[in-house]
Amino acid sequence: MYELGVDIASSGTFFDGDLVLKEYQDNIVQAVVNRLNTYTDELDIFYESYGSILQSYFGWRARPDTLAMMKVEIDAALSEEPRLLAWETELSYQGDGRLRIDMTLYPSLEESVEANLILNGSGLLEVVETEEE
Image 1 (cartoon, rainbow, N blue to C red):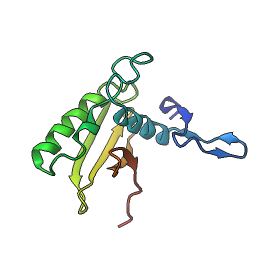
Image 2 (tube, helix red, strand yellow):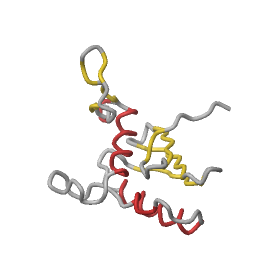
Image 3 (cartoon, rainbow, N blue to C red):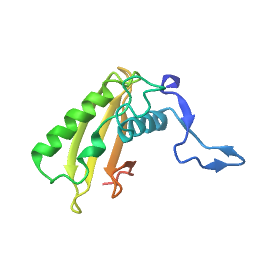
Image 4 (tube, helix red, strand yellow):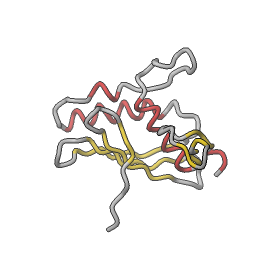
């Protein structure tokens, strides 16, 4: 589990006088969200092959071919994430037209992490809680 890492929470919030950390499964989800929310080469001074162009699809028509192109972009971006062996993604449009991405991330052969994301009204991905059935 430790190979999934620890990092400062993207929210930059504090608890008991210190920055809140994202650990293990939460950290790998945050890493994926950060990678997909960062434009390709935006951080090229620090990282090689980091980011995606997923945000460029914001505002495109809700069509199956748009979903297919976004899936290709997600796969390309995640192929650069060194902590992932594999992933599965399912993209769909919500009733309000927002994009939903349900992911299963495989950081190892023995472990999987679920991530459910929504492309919000600002064109950025955010984690959403799954509804209990």
